Length: 215
Image: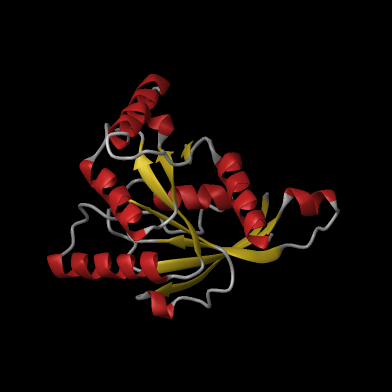
């Protein structure tokens, strides 16, 4: 898949205010400061698309980006016109952002309603910081997705910030923790926004998922 265009569309305070659910939608979520905006920008090859910040809690609404892409199949057929085929959604982070309890509850309710009721939500990418050992809050969030029957994949971020040995150790430890309560493990990717690691694999996965939906 080749990204031809990526444009910010709208920020919504509630799933009912989101754009019409007329195309596949891929949501990105993780703990505050996990590198979500940087990853989205890397995937779309546009450093200014999603706003990045060193301060956790910057994203406070449901942010939609409309993506025009060309699939491998279309490229082979010499079709060079981009089509606005799917959405990327940047969701507020969960965790320890410095916000009031009331704001946190409002975010949690907004996120839950979106994840459970957004009818065209195709996949949730849950971002995990590869620099750290398994965090309880991440494992609890995945369990919540299971209870809600929401499809998800895992993206381990910031692999350039640690040695490959530490990254590998943390990834293995995370899945070991999951195996205590999960029978099957999800699809996962390892990424670096700086080195653009994992970009091709994630875009290929999205293309394959979109193609399955068209069948």
